[in-house]
Length: 311
Image (cartoon, rainbow, N blue to C red; front, side, top):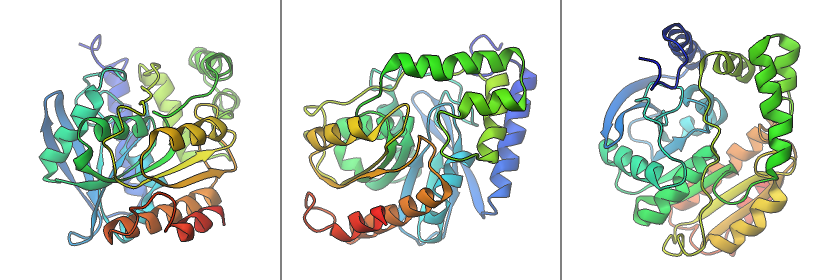
């Protein structure tokens, strides 16, 4: 049975889903669960925020799940109706169909999710691996994404592959052989700006129980995104081992037709609490302007957002 599963065993799946529920409960949010049908299988969605608030979709990173994602973007729930799907083929409550990150399947999946939720055109917030999914969607169905806020994003440019393998994959393998607190910290030190216990609790279980997706997300071209005119925010981290700012931001400026916010922040792939606070402020302002139809001109009318993101 588990040959085709993202989990290594039934016991592992049980432990991961129990952790999912515990971490979601700790957020202290009122939420509802919904399952939507897609061409690739059922997708679980957590919905939080007032029913009459403006909608936003939040897409999580690779080998992650919705509780971790909502912990990053929790401040958005105060002013938005947040729809947070568990990405199919990753360790959440959606179908375990593992899609190719390079053939556009994830973009089709997200379009199906939007259809299932009845969202015709909506802003989308994404981090890491999820950004490539959003950009795939923007390339094939640009009218469905009314604005894109992409943090420490994939899909634009990546760092050198060999250092990633040496600094991450080898320590992950060593942890699998003999899990200890010290090895766990060593395994994720290249990703964390500061120690995050919720993240470590998840990664401990993930390394022990999940068949990790190690294929890199696809990078989009200028031609593919030429029809995507919606305003876009990109925030990249200077010391991100996966998607460093000095590579991401120049290419984002090249391939995104309406890049209205482009910011470099200090830290690694998982930002500090202070940088997360600043990122959420910047995203909130960006979404407000998208909702008001003001964030539509490349760079010109969004200085307030840019200054806020640097503060």
